[in-house]
Length: 97
Image (cartoon, rainbow, N blue to C red; front, side, top):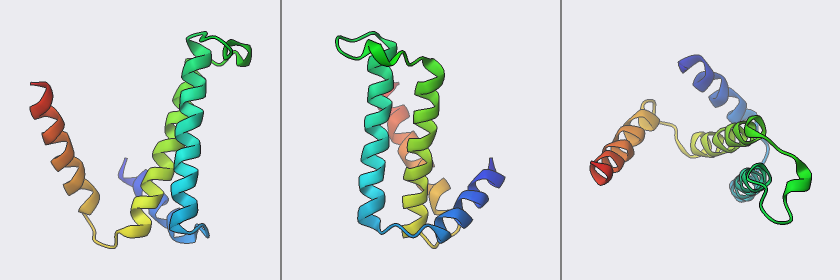
């Protein structure tokens, strides 16, 4: 996984989008996850797209990539992602335990 994160850091450094553009892109990707889920669950007006679980997973990955790229645009401290992930997952665990 570390290789993917290093690769993503490098790609993020090359990304020409502004923070605002990246935030909008993240919103767009989240919308595509929603569209895929609605189509997969055959929600009224969405079934015609005929999207499946694989489409949902791909859209989730797109969303993760944009979110991480945005994070790396803002972070210059090694280990910050891991620290924040640990903090947030600990909070999540305490809420569901």
